[in-house]
Length: 254
Length: 254
DNA sequence: AAACATCGTGCATAAACGTGCAAAACAAAA
DNA sequence: TTTTGTTTTGCACGTTTATGCACGATGTTT
Image 1 (tube, helix red, strand yellow):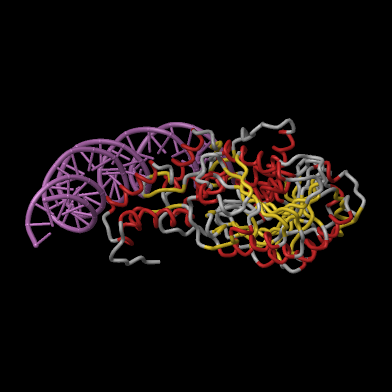
Image 2: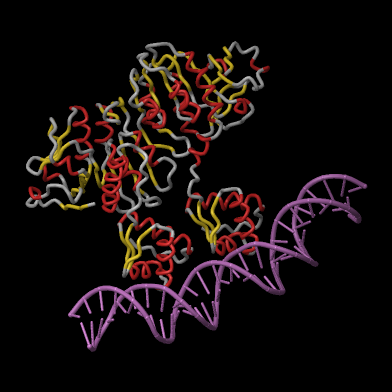
């Protein structure tokens, strides 16, 4: 996570600070000063300007993400904002150079949008929506899983996609979460969708379940993966988390 | 790293700066001056011009990539009305129940949008954009060709997509047209893109070339298909069509 | 309350900037 | 080849921007 650029343009630095802010939700002045090799005075000046522009909220020691970051376009803008918050938290688990499986789903589309650019990431997905979110952005290698497109799921499924996924080895998998419970694990509705998710998970080192609070109360028909296969759970503070206490899952709250 | 060319034409230099900008997202004036062996003044002049042309954003110390500079999306936005008109004409060649290849490209995205619903159409495409245009609309069976996504083309290319396309038999193919001339036929820029187009065309009974007027004057590097492989040409009334008179192609004007 | 960290402001310095101008390089016409 | 006209370049100049430091003020912790 070293940003040892000998020459970082002032404006570029401000931009990077914003990116970091969006990703982590907060920044510490002293840390930034060390990373960019400038005095804290300069960082403070940057943060002051960003705060004046409404990009962040200045606090003692650093800055926080400004709350008023809601596009508010759709009717379910509420859901989108929640999913964006989850996505921002989820992408903090990604490191430069990693290979990611990103399954179809509206939350996962937000994850794709929130992924940082120019980090040499490889993304394998079955969702044209996810592919579109990454198209034209620098630093992304995108692999599309072929096959028949399922309209309701919003991604490809079937033998071909499964076979293609099996031939890959990835670092992290972001499966779409239909339902998740602490006892059994991850559930899915559709049979073929289930098979593809299992292939993706099996081909990945880690599995990050990103789910809104209600997904932890929901039920579905096919058991996709046991609870011990879940390495991280990214969810909301309002979620019922007591049953997850003994599972050893790393829980990250948006 | 170092570009010690003794002879770098001014125009060429600007081009290289843009390339670097696209690759790194930023350029430093002092570094460029050293690499091109010119004074910083000249570099500053270059950057000023590029910024005026909207290719980059000038900042203290150098320049940053313009935030909204997405090569593909930009092409999408251009001539939308003209492409919609072409698309409306092109879909009149489609009959219910047919199987269609739709290649990547902004014009072809418009074709997908213009296709009639509830006609039991099967669409095979390498473009997530095309898939998205059909997603959720009734009466479409969509097959996505897997593989590595090419950012500039806006679709998948490579051995996998080619193999998948070869295993299909379709009625009509809508290849993306980089250039078309009456003597030789259909041309393409990229080598791998060319191979996929050939596979699509070879797997289809008919081939419909949909091209704006300027595509008939353009040139490209790879010959994809001979002129006799083109069954229909959909283009604009303003196009130079005299040379196509003896080819036996069915010409449809938007 | 004392000790300490962080903050904003003012100031000096250095780097980068735009502008105007004249020399140099280049291309086209004689 | 020489001449003419255009483009490109480097330099000088005054201006703007960014930076680090000093210093007093304001928070935070113990």
